[in-house]
Image 1: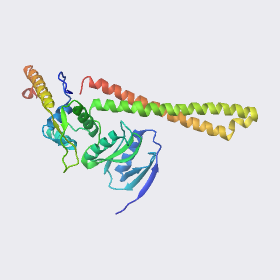
Image 2 (image 1 turned 120 degrees about the horizontal axis):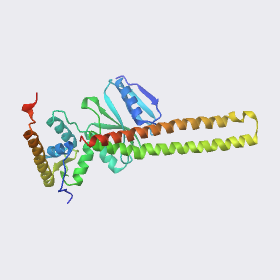
Image 3 (image 1 turned 30 degrees about the horizontal axis):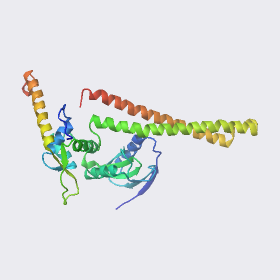
Length: 111
Length: 201
């Protein structure tokens, strides 16, 4: 299978693309969703998104949804492998946050 | 509706400068609506100032290639349209109202893109121009000898053909140097991005 089992940290872009594809979305909708989720902090360029989508398709973390005759835009959705990757990334991020909090960092300590 | 068509010629030796020039004109209300097949003559229409942002990009494959067509239709879905093209060079535009127009927003894809420019455009440009120059220097020297041998008088150095060869040679040196400068510029950008990517995503 194209899925990669051993993995390092996902890039912020890939993490957010996978989250956006928990429901079927086309490229532009993914971009808009990411912008909305992050309050405009993360805006993916079309070239970067296109490269990431092709990369994720190759790894079988996402797949193209059967063509919707109403829209000419291609839609993509996360696969089971993609969901597993996302899940382990979430655990990794939680661990990092936990470590930070343990060491005294956190919102309540900000002045 | 007031429509004015103007054509302007620009030597496309530096895509980033051309891009800057197009955006400057667009911010003054001259929107570029087309480029000729050599991407050197641009057609403008009078529109709203600051209606479009232009990007001059290098595709991975030639314009007619199936992958480029697929990429272009993806870009179109994202509100990006094609204004002109030459082989892998594509001039794109996006409405300013639709947000910032940056194709590559992470370091990895930026590095990949600059490497593509280095590998295709800049190196090829440098080789071609310097090759031309060598040919001109060679023909200049041989013409010099021929003229000196054949005519043998003092003014032979100012023979019109020689002056032409000198001029073309000099222009080539200038363009060659500008290509090398571009090469350095992209190489430096890749180096800096790689340095940054060791710390930041």
